[in-house]
Length: 132
Image (cartoon, rainbow, N blue to C red):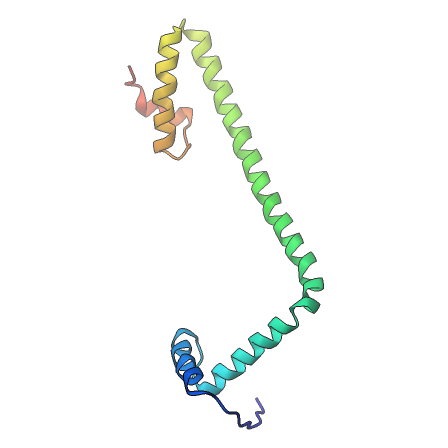
């Protein structure tokens, strides 16, 4: 990299602040720090010009992320509906359950869901047949 030498004056207080800031940055020398600071400040000054370019890019990125999250949530809700449908058909068809028992079971399952971050399947329920 071809560099030119430039001389500038700096107040003592600013030099002390720069010394502290250099320890926080990845700069290896004062020259490196000054070049990084100038690049940052130039970017700040020209941000309005680049905003016209960045706004659509950021907008597309956000839409892509939201789209991915939306798909994941839809997949999870579908799986939940399948598991719920299986459960209601198995239990509802086999047993005549009282309202009190169902209320107690709902409370117990709510605790179980919270403890397992919402990940429950019929296969895992086999390990937990001692509810009562």
